[in-house]
Length: 409
Ligand code: GLU
Image 1 (cartoon, helix red, strand yellow):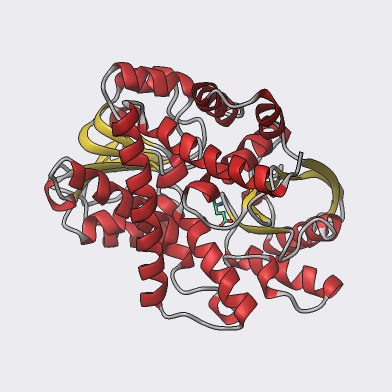
Image 2: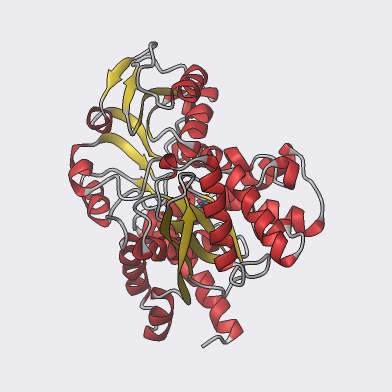
């Protein structure tokens, strides 16, 4: 489990910075951790109790922000790790938020739509005093989408009055933002483009393997494909598909929509997850779940670089193995930052009661990614350290500066 990966990476960066122990103590722990009991009357009439969580890590740079995950593995340590990660991500890409993370330990595939809605609404009732547009703003994450965000907005509004900026990733009809849905995948692709440019290369001359074909994986694969890149293998939890000349990604997206998996796609050969992991390629996009790239997996990888487009996909052991093997990791702090960047724009639009065009959103996203990339790349070159460490150092410095100025301790 990658539950403590953020803490491990954070500690290493803090030690390198020789950060004063008082800041270390403060920032290694969340400022609030809440667990709620969620009774759900199943469609069958049976009562089940689920556990819900919201962890709020730091608020020195603004209200807290982070996803809402529905997954059987959701627990307190996972939430803590991801809430902390959000603090550093928001600081690196310079959006005025601290980190938070929430979730419900459940298997959403085993619940009907009505059950899921009731469960979501009960969760919102239980945490309604903790969230708010200037307190903590949830957003989509694994297994939650704009439909779930609409329920969150509606339930919170029933308690506090109409409040669109309490949650981001909403449907467009409920003051969601253009580009929010594709933001994470698009930004991962932009980061890959920046990285390749530093090597004097382009997406169109490069090959990609994409692990995970959910929101992030599918939108980044689409972007690689549209820029002329060859996506040679794609996997999801049911298997994978390979085509040396490059997969037709728009058709694969259609196949996934119809069948619920990439497996069985006729215009390519079956490929197992393990085979895909060991495929030679320029960039391996880890767009599945946290902790998927373990030390053992990393030892088998033949990619020239790993793009960590899912939060905490690479464990600290894997990170060390990849470093030893000379495989650069483009870390989640930047590679998975597109969602929260466009969430920020959605929040800004909601607060101002304005609506931006797709061009405005993309322009803003590009500017944030380029500026964060310059910090990560230059930091890594100047200090001769891994990109991940450079990203953490930049983020820690920003948070500590805010903390010191506010005098929170
Ligand atoms: N869950 C996404 C992330 O981990 C989005 C968070 C947000 O938009 O607040 O970055």
